Image (cartoon, rainbow, N blue to C red; front, side, top):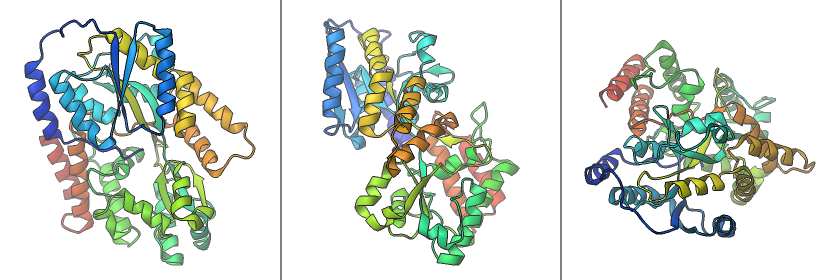
Length: 423
């Protein structure tokens, strides 16, 4: 769930321009008591859950009806953009902070700071609530979460003489050399292809390098930023990363792990079930460790949130429903059904207690326990900001140039910073 697809900024600007020009100061009043709720590819697996959820809400609010619309993952971006532009957006919609922030910068969503009491905000994990803020204003309510763990091949590590999986990037570099020398395999695969996974981009933050400063200008053209560039260049040039990191997405990395060609893969704990289906022999020798991080100890969390369009005719009812969906009991029920994590403080505490009570917890369940324990250090490492896809493109393309010897590390870092600052 980590590699959620980003939207084209050009399509965004084109659609929003027509929307902004057509907006009036206030929407026409509506007598309807029906609100529309959009989710992202949750049918048919969770149909029963949502039908029960909606039935319970309607029972508590007899004058309100909720119409649930589930949108395919690949269609959500275009559909919500078109709906916002035409002022026909749903009343509550399931997005993620990075995508939602692109529209938040155009004031598409309801400002929640004046509507959600502080005592309600405090029910959610602070770092997770912060993920749905832009310029200090809250535009979304946290829903469900995932934090990646490290799934590793115990046989490959044993053959390389490694007693425990690496937990930091410094340890990864050392392990990668041992694994290559002793087994001929790779330690891991992290793509450097723009618009795919953000692991390498997040590694800057984990290694203590901020991507932008308070004014939004590049903050990585520093000795520390150059050191991160150099880290990835050295790994590649020493033959410790598969060459396909420059051309293939993260799915290729998953395939390499299932084929026994890499010793580790970063994924959700539930991915062990997928490995069991695709590569049962690899699954048998797989175990789970915490997410790899840098000197900061920071770990990434992926967030799904609920946002309320500014033009909703029933903001109070929409907000009441969004808070109902994301309250602790309903989050815990969904977390159990979907193998994800809740985003409330009480919810994550109860989630951890429930796992701890099971003496026969499976590898997947142990992985979920690790995922939950990471939340105290976890945050959305790539902050909500305008044109984040262009920042990733500038860094990844210049990093590739440094890896291929087309530029020095110093020039690649400087060029990436210049390209971003021009945007």
